[in-house]
Amino acid sequence: MVYYFFETELHLNGLYVSIATIIYSLWNAINDPLIGYITENRKTRSHWVVTGLLVCSVVFALIFAVPDGVKTNQFFLFIWMVILVCLYDGCYSLWEINYQGVFPDKFRETEQRKKCAIICTLIGVFGIALGSVLPPLFYTYGKPETFLKSAVIVGAISIVGSVLIRSGVRETKEMTQRHSKQTEQSENKEGFF
Image 1 (cartoon, one colour):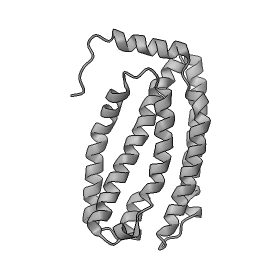
Image 2 (cartoon, helix red, strand yellow):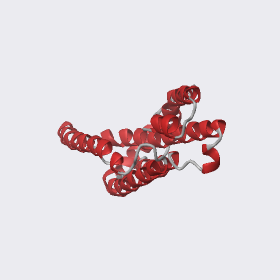
Image 3 (tube, rainbow, N blue to C red):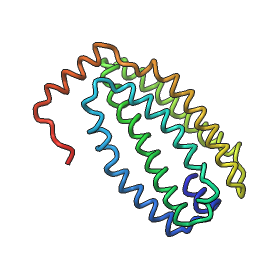
């Protein structure tokens, strides 16, 4: 809905939307490896999961919280879109990369992983369905201000989910020690580039 919102609801020129998409795509190409590299040597990953989710929830709402002065200037609207979409993607990557890093360490046995994968898939399917059905209940086409209301509701639900996931991704002392040991033993650690 972001591209629709900026182009159709706020009337951002299609060329600006295209350039914003290209910039976002370039950022997305370096974003994951950069965040992975920065957070790789940290003792715990679970706090990155929760922090990334919480900030991601707020930034999601901010994408749609375009100030009136910005709405009337094509260039500023373009900058708003680029910065917030890239910031959102960075926060999303922060939690997702670290979640994916915690998962195999937390669930070490094949049977555990299978059970967890089933649960995660069910939650994911339900979440995608809810994410498709819920937001349109709160916005009205042709009324850009209603998109912010919808985004705040989705962000609030995400914040609740962020708090609930905290105990599930919390690393044990054994996990943090194992992660620290693996990081220290990595003699051939490559640089980012």
